[in-house]
Amino acid sequence: MRYVELTRAPCNQTLEVMAVNGDVNWEKRFESMGIRKGRRIRKIADQPFGGPVVIEVDCSKISLGRNIAAKIEVEVLAPPAA
Image (cartoon, rainbow, N blue to C red; front, side, top):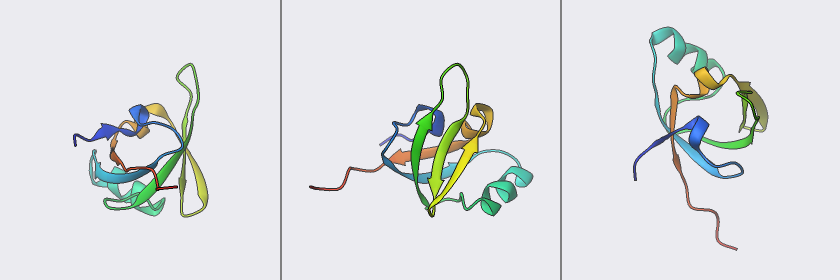
């Protein structure tokens, strides 16, 4: 499956971080927030009119600007079986 930017991923789905694009400083910033390759996150909200993207990482909610969220590539994981 092709990876998608976090800004284009569906809400309320489990996502796996596949790549973090940007320079070393951005990688360190994302790492400090718990966002790194292989980490599972959940996109909670996608605010309208160019607003932020809200994700959940280890029970913490993080709000990211759209330009920043676009640097994160994710894979949408299959929803858990009911």
